[in-house]
Amino acid sequence: MQIKFKRLSPDVPVPEYKTAGAVAFDLSVTEGGTLAPGESRLFPTGLVVEVPVGYALILAPRSSNAKKKVKFANGIGLIDQDYHGPTDQLFLALHNFSSESYTVEKGERIGQGMFVPVLKGEFVEVDNLEAENRGGFGTTG
Image (cartoon, rainbow, N blue to C red):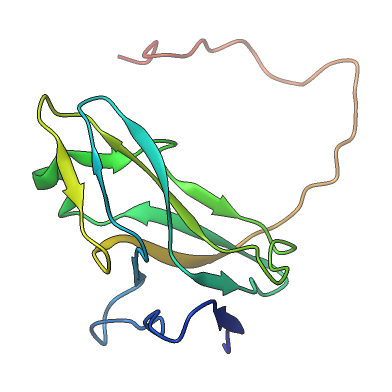
């Protein structure tokens, strides 16, 4: 599958899968900055990516972020198929969950992107659903 993308600056790395078995490509940031304890901030990637029809782009933290005590402020990022205008760049929403400041370095690979197929449902309203209440939030043990 070919993915169309635009770099907003020539020094932004071309997205790539680092190994033959990698399912996600790394995302680095074009600006650094220090996150105070408990602080959240958006960091630009300098990339605009056209998500193919029938897919979504999931942005997730790299596994090494746990050691750095930095996570995505929104858990994951979900990039829609129509978010690829001339300046619709990908941003990483980072949150420092430690008691110490963390400095994000310019060019640091701190996120990853993965294309996943999506199906859109057609919603049909009904008066009753043919099922018993089963509960939730740990009701199965």
